[in-house]
Image (cartoon, rainbow, N blue to C red; front, side):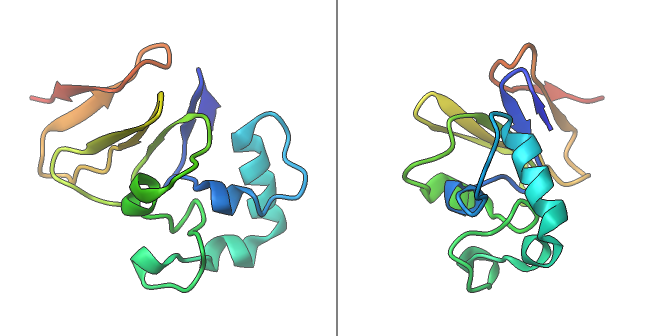
Length: 126
């Protein structure tokens, strides 16, 4: 899903995986979703080396936070995703764009608030 300039996905999207899409449209999320439905097996089994696979880049199902951190030429969009559980979540900036992992494990009382496509802000849950 893409909203207010932020791409929300299960595990994040790497440019190398996105470039497998032969004819993407201007909406990154729509392009990824269409590609996933047309190439289900590839989408579900494309696992990068950080997760023990052999693909050059993991799909939106299998991408790893560290792959997104190490990426040299990221997609020009903010991204919010889960899939890599951490204590308190993590955020990294790639140029002007952030990569925010919000998978915080259920035992930590932190959530993130994103207003109008802005930078995610931690919120303590009580």
